[in-house]
Image (cartoon, rainbow, N blue to C red; front, side):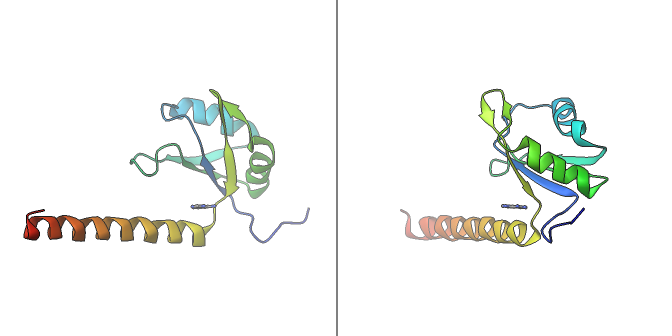
Length: 113
Ligand code: ADE
């Protein structure tokens, strides 16, 4: 089977219900093969997303192909391959936002606004 260059054993999932449990995640993603690890977003910015690491890249592909648009508690899952560039971009954007917020608060204190 041909393996596309963007394929990974890790998938990035968005639009999960905030209250989904680890057991439910393993039920959903374990259908496509052995899951090594699931990391659920647990901050305000990352809640509703998760990284799922499969043992086998072909299982990750099956999950991307078959779970994209899957309905969980009325929400439609977005399932992508893990993309390190996008992960880094996202991290950078969040860090910039935090830095801006720090500057804003420091300015407010100094100006008494
Ligand atoms: N952030 C946004 N898209 C991403 C992806 N495909 N993989 C990892 N982090 C992401």
